[in-house]
Image (cartoon, rainbow, N blue to C red; front, side, top):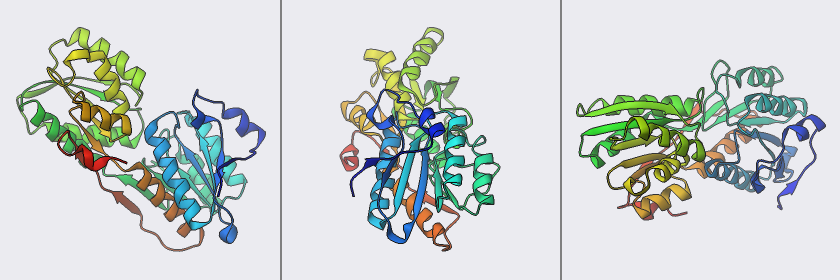
Length: 314
């Protein structure tokens, strides 16, 4: 089936202005008609390569299963995402997939969908304070621990580290940070000297890292809770990246893997965003049909380094 732009309600259309990328122009639909199952999917942002891959996996699965999928971009605006989910509910979608901007702020809209007997699947990030039929996500706590172990290894188990945190309120940021904090405790000669949010954004990662270097010029390690922030940090570090300062990211995006191959990014904890998208739609279709599904689906993560990066080529 061909991807096509579909019309949405006026309020939704107004809320979905472009973010300077072809991927953020508004709701799109794929699939077509088997059993007349229509699924709505709200993605936190499509101005991030990771979530573009997540959407691609969802669209592939929708096409495979012959269902209609409408995808909207919340542009990292929790209020806009609530409106999107409410619109999906009023449109009587058979199931809704949400990749929350904010795990707490998503709860009221999820509850409203549940009251309308529309099953909700959480993708990549959990929802706090509301019941979803299924959460499809990587084990972010374990991923954070793996990041700590790899960074410690790359640093020779000694030195000073700064942490670039993701969007506050997201389960991904919280869990990755928790895992890293737990993992790094095993290395008493490594000190975390600063932790600061950069909102999963490359430009903010550059700005925050530039500022942190002013107060911590002797830093020898960086953990960024996603690859976009890691790539921003690498730019701020310049020639130090990969030599004097080891940087570990999270996600395994194409740009992140290229940086690993180039040696500027020491490692990234590689997720499988396409698989996450596929699994979320598979669960949504089953839930729409009234079939029982697992409460959680864990998609494995693995550390990508220069030694094994070829395994992750898409």
